[in-house]
Length: 91
Image 1: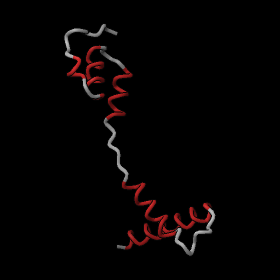
Image 2: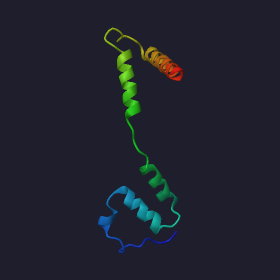
Image 3: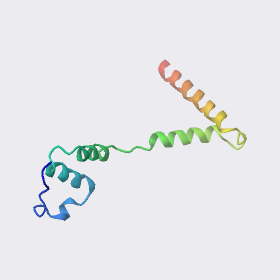
Image 4: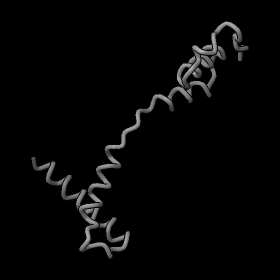
């Protein structure tokens, strides 16, 4: 591993994790940690699936069905997903 080029880069230019790890990757040629950090930081977060599941849970766990045990709610959710998937295939 090479030594970093301290003093060459203005610290303000390294503001932000992507720029920092890109610099580390350049400064330490072949840094596995820098490559891993860049891959992890490049992952786009998406909450749509989580929101969809909570919406589905709200349809299952209503005021009339509020005494269902978690296992029963999970089974109903799995059944709903299977039915939705089967209906999507037919279309």
